Length: 367
Ligand code: ATP
Ligand code: MG
Image (cartoon, rainbow, N blue to C red; front, side):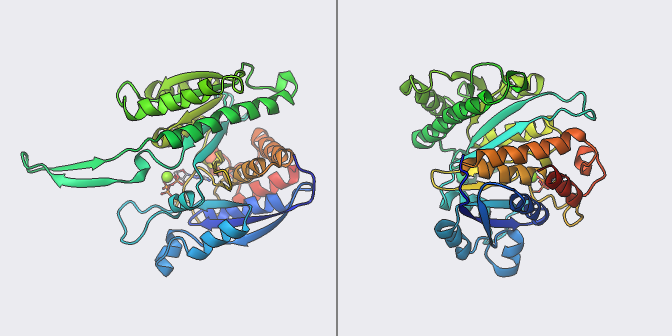
């Protein structure tokens, strides 16, 4: 934890839809912190709407600013057209590549509240590999000469290099989470076992790709036996992972998964805590961090001041955490949890009647 008043330069990329409503909310929270770093915000262009105006979804200027000047960034959301648009590709996927943000880290936790007595309790961290798997987008279509009907193919890439570094991140974060838990009184600790990493795969079917993934992530612990002696390792086939996550989500601490499985599991986990609007993420590399709410641009509610700002605010906290400002991050998480547990000022996705601005004000008041 740093206490010096260092200045952090943070790139803000609200991009599309509700991104433009929730990123300013997160910015206000960062500006209102009473301790920790000073912030300088750089407003940067990106997104589908920017593409429609200018023909480019991710200006070179944005990439240069982030690479050369910023300590970190906050990204809102991009609209993804369901059909192929000539010349357009997702700026977030490109940014992950340019900045080598190889892991997407998603903490999902429930908040106890009188208004949701039946909610399952969980506090898990999903780490999603961010650079390969089916997301290399190598697809083709051909006509089967035998049937005369179309056949479509997609390549899936799993490398030892990418699996190893995201695996190491999972074990390291299991240790970090444990050291944070140790600072709390025992009665307030949700996870009471030894730290645990769950490796998700489907190597009973995909023995080559998922086999390499599983073997490589296992190898991280086996090759660093002493360093990770305090961390348990288990495996789950992706289908039984989903089943168990819905039945006993409290059984998971850190979960590490290839790109596509990680995407699916984390949307499922968001359903368990009530809304996509509360789940944050951080795109993490060795040299850069970019906070990003898990939800998309939500065109159905954009521009109405009813989007839940919690995911974006928690993403800002996650950004702080990864930049070394743990104390300030915990302040933000605490302020958000208080608003959620009081359950009087909530946006409609959580069953409330309040606006984006009102929820943001409530968080600021609790800071
Ligand atoms: P995209 O293509 O950008 O992902 P989408 O239509 O898939 O857009 P999502 O943003 O993924 O929309 O949201 C899925 C559903 O969850 C939508 O009904 C949306 O309104 C709701 N939702 C997502 N984020 C929030 C939020 N922050 N607050 C309230 N509701 C949200
Ligand atoms: Mg979506």
